[in-house]
Length: 306
Image (cartoon, rainbow, N blue to C red; front, top):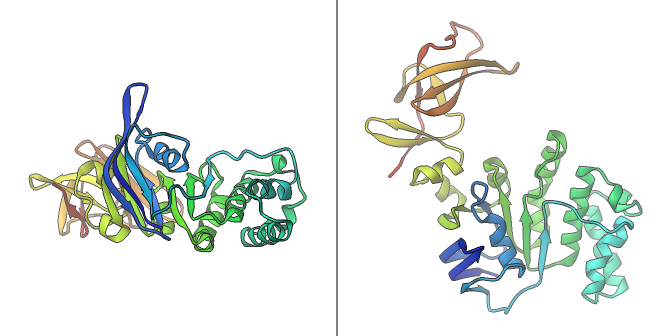
């Protein structure tokens, strides 16, 4: 089910928070919505969920008037009942019979690795357990449109890594058109096939993730995508994360060293190229620049910006 926006505008308090002349989201794929805080990412999800109304324009859902939606919010909201009862609630409201409801709950619990939690009070779960139950609740609905609003935000590193490893396969089980709101570039690339960059309520770029990442185009888009935007030979370039190295090379920059980070498994120089903060991995041996030194660095990979 493709989703198409035409002339969509959303206003709040007299301010336009979303302005999308045209956008097509490809069906049965996962699209990550990236953008800074306040860019309209959650408003976009709320619009698709029917929780927000457009002042102008139209959203079409592959010929359907409005499909069933599974919405995974940032914060879990559970009844003070068992996990099983919380998973069953949405199905009961949709009139699913008991046999089918039991099958869906058990299948979702198995996929999320939570069968042992089904009889536990949902409001007494740990953060990671709660996120898995939240995802299971959405999976039970078998909705053609799944909306995920930063579903991994705020988890400890170990729990985050485990859920992120599981999420791509889990989304395949949804077999739905899925939108993932995130501010994390790494998370978006791991999970999604398509990317949309939203800045100040406007779509700046959208498409297949490889095409978007290889042509950031504008400096503000490049920054959202995690690139370092640097001046070189009279124009600006976008340098991918981890692509800066010490010494001479293809494209060189002069960096003022601010600090040396000892991260045990590696060392990094932190410094400034112009006004831009950069991190440069350095070898474990050899002479190390000191704070305040001017150091030559380079990159072999970069993209020209307009």
